[in-house]
Image (tube, rainbow, N blue to C red; front, side, top):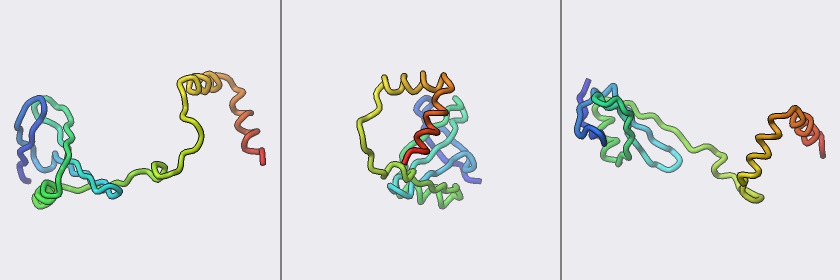
Length: 110
């Protein structure tokens, strides 16, 4: 197991075992981050990682986790944005049993 020198925003430079460091790569954007739990203050720290940092961390055996943005982010949005009043009305509707019948009626409509 390798020892990795990382910087905690609270504690400064600390050393973490390679098992305590993770690298995350977004396959949609190509952006990468690395994260670790500071051994002194126990805060989880996440920082951007350049290609060189990703390569260096991979060479010492740190696992790379790939993920992608949800497809919903690329969907075309239509209609006005939701307002606080819309959210409040939705919340109040959910407090009654009428919303179930209204939803069923919407599903049956052509």
